[in-house]
Image (cartoon, rainbow, N blue to C red):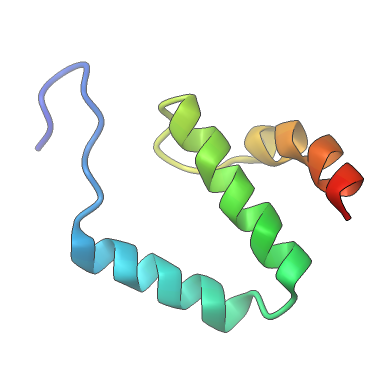
Amino acid sequence: MPLPGTKPALHAGNQELVSRLLHLHFKDDKTKEAAVRGVRQAQAEDALRVDVDQLEKVLPQLLLDF
């Protein structure tokens, strides 16, 4: 259990699992990129999960990139 005010670390095994799930379920590269950017945005906000809010924040840049 993490200390108050800290976020839990993602263990190496969990990182591999998340990576595998992304590759299996998001076949389209654009969808995969949106998921990755959503995760990065959530991490930047210290959020524990990706929500619609994070995806909405990265969507404009994603649309410009493709």
